[in-house]
Amino acid sequence: MFSALLRTALTLAVGLILGIAASGAFMATRPPGAPAPNIGNLPSLSQPQQQQQPAQPASSEAASQVYERVGSGVVNITFTARQQDIFGRSVQQEGTGSGIIIDDQGHVITNQHVVAGATRLDITLADGTIYIGELLASDSANDLALLRIQAPADRLRQLTTVPLGDSDSLKVGQAVIAIGNPFGLERSASMGIVSSLGRSRPGLEARLITNMIQTDAAINPGNSGGPLLNLRGEVIGINEQIEVSSSGGSSQRGNIGIGFAIPVNTLKRYLPDLLAGREPRHAYIGIAGVPLTPTLAEQLRAPVQQGVILTTVVPSGPAGRAGLRGGTRVDPASGDILTDIDGHQTRSVEDVAAYVDQKNPEDTVRVTFFRGGQSQNADVILGVWEAQNAPGR
View 1 (cartoon, rainbow, N blue to C red):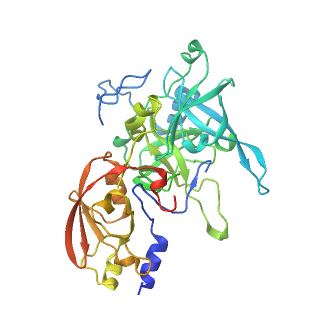
View 2 (view 1 turned 120 degrees about the vertical axis):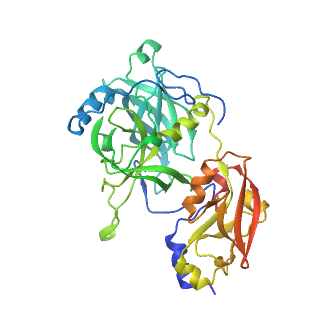
View 3 (view 1 turned 180 degrees about the vertical axis):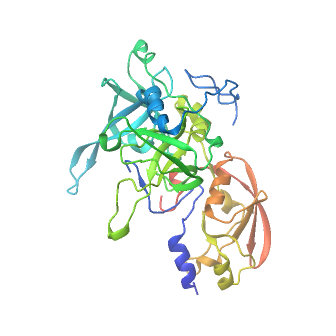
């Protein structure tokens, strides 16, 4: 019989299809290979930069200095879309988000959820000039989109561009600055710190976005797609979502000091694909599960204390083809217990997501799992993630 404790774990844990399918309380803030070329002011993505970095200013002066230097490189994006109202009628709706000018070709990075379904995109520059924006490509797995400002070349060369930094060098406690258009208030700045690193959060397409940056810099609806900057004025993250407070029975849609940004190194990894006008390909393993805790392991009399109980294995997915099994509807706890991928322990679905995200489609990984009390191994050839790979899609 499926235990009450496991039912609780299934309710509270983040489900995962890698993919990756996940569920959890969040609100979006609206909601390798060949060396990469130099694009405008962008550094080569494959070569280390040798230039000396300027000393960081005192934090009391940093916000104004960074804002003066790169604030005009943050744009306001107004999107127009048609949706159905409660009566099924087609109505026009508008919303706003933020974007980052990254080169002198007029390329702008933002979140996909800012532009998804839009019939028109207007980009407002710092001087109030409005140009039409063209959607070039999206990375739905990471909620990223690349736009281009439809303006004359000589005008584009005059625009402020915002350099991309290195999110791998971040440390908890480091000061950061968020610039964006919260609630339509253009180019607002807020300052905070890096609260944590390596967070995994549910994104748009029932998939975890991994290695996210948590910050207490004020992020609100409208900040989506805007930059999270270090004190050198470099983009180290793209603001994407905030935690929602549900205390008192209602959800608070404003900032509560817990915001999340997509690390800029994720963008840099897939930027060549976006610039080429194609959606990046992501590795997919095809499993869903919940973490096995020591308490749950004791109740289930499991042979191990930690791992991931596979509640679902997509039959036609990579893990399914390699022979892994998920639980049944009668007994979800009967699934294999995944404990290791390529020698890396898997204590949670986030561990699985973070490791698979480092891989490419067609890569092979060796997994260790327990079935019937016995340890087994299998080689899994990773597939290509698509939104419809998720359960119910």
